[in-house]
Length: 174
Image 1: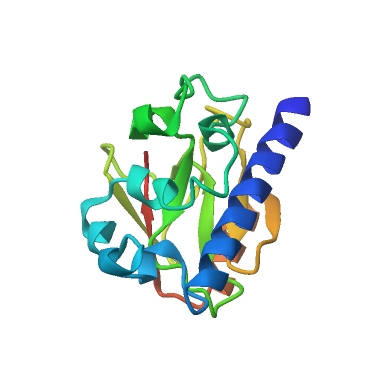
Image 2: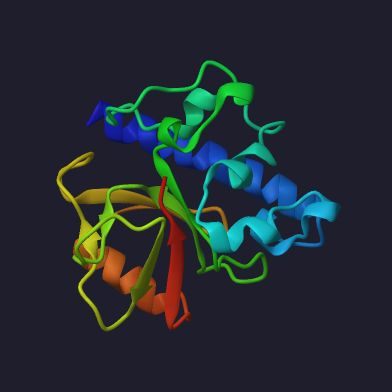
């Protein structure tokens, strides 16, 4: 339980960094802002996670915040060494600064039950979706566009997808 609480705190810290970025960029998250304006919009189609977190690294104290304590991955020692395999949270590629219910980030142990491991996971409201046992025993943290963090099971995840108002949520999975 302590690891889940620490993970929730990490996600809240990421949320604060994302909101600071949005406040500086006309209420837009990094994936909505072109690279020449300090964002990561051109990286969205590649499914890489690192650029989306690097642009908010000034607001994060250490890269260790990008890894859940219950995750088996190793944290990067500094932001210069940060790679996708040092990150435990996905990036919601369709999150919008003006949409408080959009899914911004969350634990990487999310699945749509399709075979294989994709860089971009496509989640729709009419397909199975859930959390694996890997990190929080079929639970996970979600950060929404308004900065709130929810600890939800698979049913709660499905409901959050419906509430997001987006037919398909694209998630970049590290």
